[in-house]
Length: 490
Image (tube, rainbow, N blue to C red):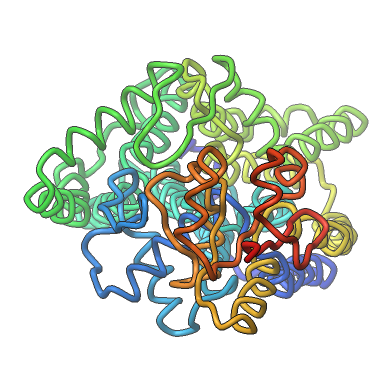
């Protein structure tokens, strides 16, 4: 931590507007948690992995459905699935059970910025940073999404802020305690998404060293204690998985991490990859840190008007912002980066912006007022988007309709002639028939005879593309905006 940064955490009262803004964002996030159905493909796929874990009772190996069979899901470690499976056991299948781990991880991240961030930049700046973080559309959206990124963000935020708050002059006992906490945080991150947790925390430390032109930020850490804590948390599951599924470590570390980072078109066994141009991580960082960057721009302008540029220069602002931007630099060579990968950089960007905001004497009440307005806008956006998201990005409603029609016909089979969406497996359960080839019904019409009583679900555009022979064998019995429900003609 820079020597000029405040260390003491004093009791400072929250302005009512700031508390109201934070509460409004939380209220909107909680109230809309179950508004959308689970969206294909990532949300439904991860939710299905967790639901299957809860139902099978296998809490060691996450499993995914491939051609109707449960196979080990070697693409991601298990921590987020453990949390989601526990929620499924308590709440049953549904959007809230699937999404609540991300919500809790988002809340924990904001609390970490408030608590640990205050040790780095002071109480008021940490509160401003927490507000800016919660206001971020990407962060807010991920807090209501089935994804691993916010669980990772919570752990890496702890690691980065503990590093920024490191005091080499502290007693050995205090440094060992801090090292153990950092190791635990890194171990949790490793169990969530793998070595990217080390990249987030390590790149932040290196960035601070570069800005300060000194290795002092790396000196005095309890490396042995921290390393031991990391291994104790993360290593047992990886060792056990390799023992039960030989080849797991090679696939996970080489295919899922190294090759996806270094090569542009490396896929995996469990889903498609995202291929963009190298350097896309910079754009993703700008999106993830957007509220912070806007706040920094306002603070800079206010500082210039008031003539307090010296306060700006004395603050550890540049070091903290560099710690955030470092992740974008690390990921810049990769072309398989999406905006959610940069969410772990958002808390430190928000903390830097909070410091700039308070140094410019802009006050928390202004941020609170903006947060209230933004919460209302985000709530309205959810209501406006709900019909399209429900109809076009998920099969929840059409599965409900198809199950009713199947029941009326005395059938228990629902078939997708094209690729079966993950959400169909999640919402349809055993009624959705898994098939070895997700497209063969549209290539060989005779195979319809295999499902004489089944209810078929096709997209509207697929129906328009059916051959005359196949169209003659199917009868459309109901439809929604995007889907058609058909049965085989007698």
